[in-house]
Length: 71
Image 1 (spheres, rainbow, N blue to C red):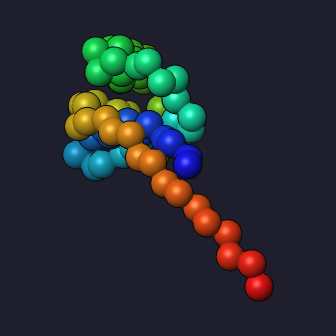
Image 2: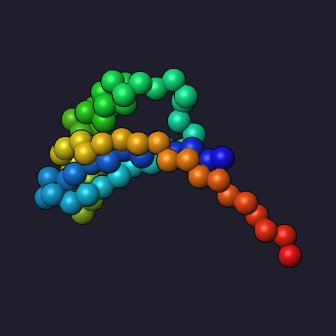
């Protein structure tokens, strides 16, 4: 089962944006995740067409199971 941590933001122009972290550590607390998200916003390291991340929308884990079919 694949597990992804999806970090959801809004940009300064109001658009939605998300960052995905593959195979995140298992012991992350919401406090740590939101602290990191604030650091990402403050650093302005990500920009989409010159528009930076400005607001936290949320964070969530997404788990997915892939079953390959044999012919």
